[in-house]
Length: 133
Image (tube, rainbow, N blue to C red; front, side, top):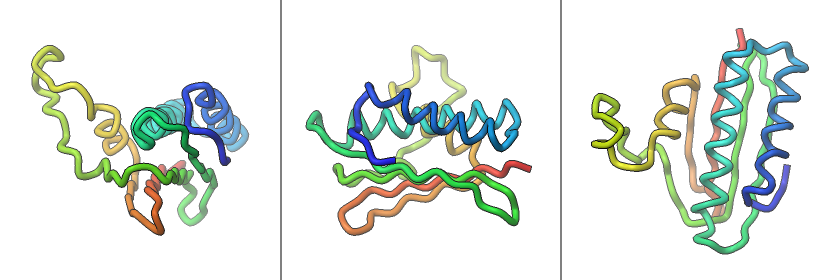
């Protein structure tokens, strides 16, 4: 998928992810985790990558085998940013005492089996994988 990184396109991204997972017979809990991850990553690109300017997101969705897993790759040409370097929030603190931000990426790190970031040829590239068996 190649689309403008805006909130208006979020339903398109989520619908595509859900459709593929349903067709594959994916477990409901795993579907929820993958849809949540797709939402978090796309919204982060839409809100922060281009610093308020229009920009594009390229998303590749695919199934891989041995072992069976779902892979999502998010690419943007926005400001270089590695979310994996962001310090994890202290979830032992109350919501009022925690700093704002970072919880979505933390949840992705906790629920996905693999997450990788690279800055390649002027693009942020974030790849996540989730085992389906």
